[in-house]
Length: 245
Image 1 (cartoon, rainbow, N blue to C red):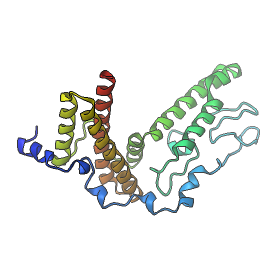
Image 2 (image 1 turned 30 degrees about the vertical axis):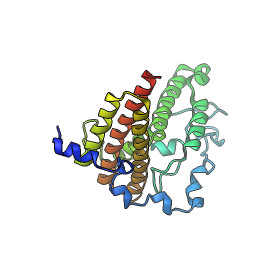
Image 3 (image 1 turned 180 degrees about the horizontal axis):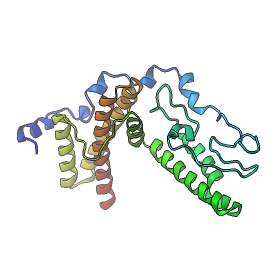
């Protein structure tokens, strides 16, 4: 798969620099240049719309009214951010995760199918569909990798499981990390790999934030693919620790 020379070259890299994408060392994440007050727009109060049937304010951005028990489906192109009333601009990668979790709970409490069971089977079916959309949007925004993939998909740049990284040095480091985990005889070796990998994950997430903020989509895709490899190493390290605890 790779030459022996390339693999040995990876072993000469200083450990502190492993997994740190070269591009991320020169790209300042978009959030670092945004004032804190501007970043906190994620914590704004939901801009409730009114029920089309009874005209009362809706409790969430979803078309579900607990006053008159009117409920309808969402348009198929509704953005994940809009389901939770989270801002898409100026950078859709910036998501207040604590606020996302709160609004997820609020949305599910309103749209849970059990709450609509006594309102008729048709309304319960709509609630079931809305609940599924809420779950899909929540999972899509919760994790940085799935969030990046979702944003890229919206810009017609799909990220596939078969996508690879055209960076020999990075791939050599990934191979070395996997070998270290597979051949590990003590916990310290695995913990060392895990620490380096987590540093790489953090740096790659910072890089993604900057690239998506600048709408550099192809570079953002490359960073997302690297992040997938790094998360694979982290999972392998956790599995080793679980099996040897």
